[in-house]
Image (spheres, rainbow, N blue to C red):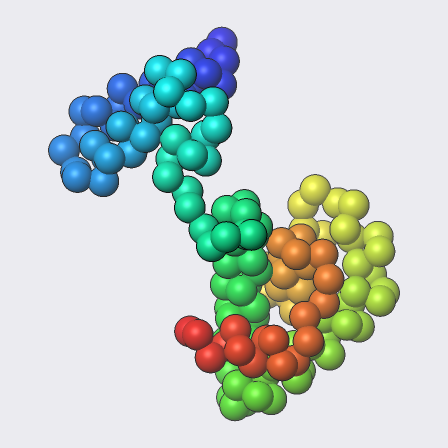
Length: 143
């Protein structure tokens, strides 16, 4: 059974064998960490974000924003973005005030994939608070 470090070493070796330019760049970055040049994985991988932000936070918000866009397109397709934002914000608030208190402790979504509650569960598992209609509208504007 391999350890996470063994897997990381295997990843670096695999990337060295891939002929794509991005693979070579990633192999260099992974090797920075493996060689001990830095013990900070984010620094080794050049995961830079704006000052005062964290790269993990940025990826979490990006995942939430993607889930919001998908929910608006799936459940409110005939509406204009402003109305989509209002409907989705209202649904998020209702869900957060009711079933979310129980559902947030579940590892897997308790709803069928085509259910609006499943989309709301995904959104709230990314960032654990309802988003205002104004913010959702801005998210939808960046499709």
